[in-house]
Image (cartoon, rainbow, N blue to C red):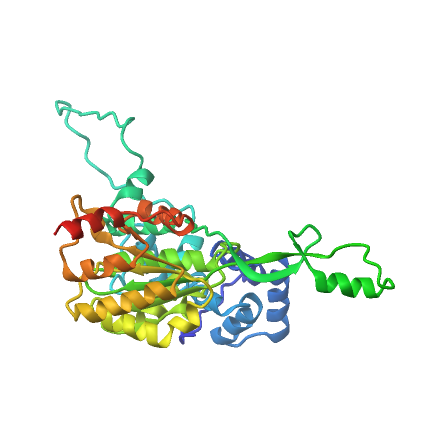
Length: 420
């Protein structure tokens, strides 16, 4: 925790009431704080006391924080609630565009905006005083009853054309998306009263207990298991904005209970391959992407698709692709390295995965043709070729994952490659 000077106590302190309000703010920010923890916090402060701000911080931290990913949110809510005036003004400037804080150059940390939303909930910006229009001014009224709703427009809007406010709204929509998948039928069987296969070994063991008389026939059925999802995400300069949105989507899939996937593995690549799977396990999406961005040092750099796929096939394919995994390859395919090496690595990746789906934002253009050498080399080795430039295109991924007959735009583009 950063060091702050101690604040003078008011003449009529109401510490218990303030701790209760602080707990409500934590609950609004997403921490599982109930009445029991509030009582424990009051008793902890009563038992331990405090002589400085740090003692008070850690006493409450010990009660309210139970998971590592909750630390950042707790720190930001504590800082806002227990009166750091300059920081509060800064966070109000983030939440309310009409207010400009004195520390606007200071970047918000992970969990800070969520903390501000929990404390500033319900505050409306004051409307500026505007001059009255002259009486002879012509007023124009527009009938917007048939216009597209904001959410529907955001579904089809290109990620690269979004403003900061629209991108934030799109991320909230992406957080609600799901990626359904069907379970795989395993070779292993388990005892099942209504199974289709007879289990003769267990039947004979049961008969031995009955003096050799077979009274019932034991049965078995095949077990089902969930596949892994593996994402290879291009973070080069031309793909950075799309990659951030796809990583938000992968974080939502990885942290949604009952999503069906055994595990979600994520790798980023530009000039080198980086495994960011452990960062997606964090509940806070801002903290997760910040940690992933700090580890992947090649953000918005060059692209070496063939070399990065070689590193994945050599170091990771046997670890993460051995359970019938589905692979999402997110890249525009604009690679200037050796095309022969790229073709070999794509073929090996395709043979190792149960299904390889290529997500390419260049499909947003009408009349897109695979003229680039890298795209023409990679295309024959994928099962489906789909766009990935909008919320609607990410929603459509569910069909490509669950339906093995879905190939997206691959068939059309393969005809163009053959006629070239």
